[in-house]
Amino acid sequence: MLRIFFVLVLLAGCAGKASAPSAPEAGAVPGKHSPAAESLFAKARALWQGDTCTEPQEAALILDEALDGDPKFAAAWAYRGLAHSELGKREEAFDDLTMAVRLDPRAEYYAYRGLVSLRGGVLSAARRDLEYSLEKDPQQYRAWNILGDTALREGNAAQACKYYANGCSQGECEPLRQARNDGQCK
Picture 1 (cartoon, one colour):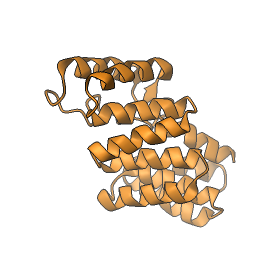
Picture 2 (tube, helix red, strand yellow):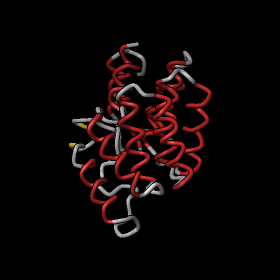
Picture 3 (cartoon, helix red, strand yellow):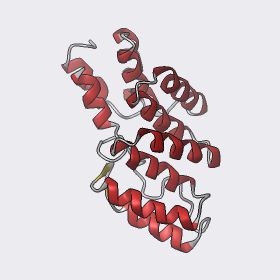
Picture 4 (cartoon, rainbow, N blue to C red):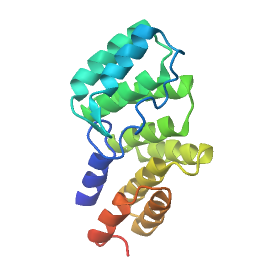
């Protein structure tokens, strides 16, 4: 259980290493959205240090304003979903990420929605979104690692280790290292 908590924190929307896309402009194409919305998005994105959001409540409020001005800004929906997830607002997080995938059905957004479902204990929905994320992009390390957490919750440590190994092969090895330290993987 400690292992799952660690990885959920690691993958959390605003408080973990693998949480948010590492490029500040991830999902946002300069000039595609209103200048005001892009400016607000950048302001919210500045609250992330690397992949860690220092102020999820403030980020959510700023992104509210960005979305009021440009409701078709998928990256803003996704980031607000991650902030809401970190704040424990699972329903709002799921709805925001659903809007993000409707506007821009990228693998990363499906992986984040899978994380929200996992956090809410809806394992079948988590698995569905994570597997779909991997269909879209087999190199989506977040999806592999969150799928590993899902397998652990389902009681399948052997499968979880395989998923973590796939995530590691795509560049994020911390969940596999942690599972090995916890004795769950060899």
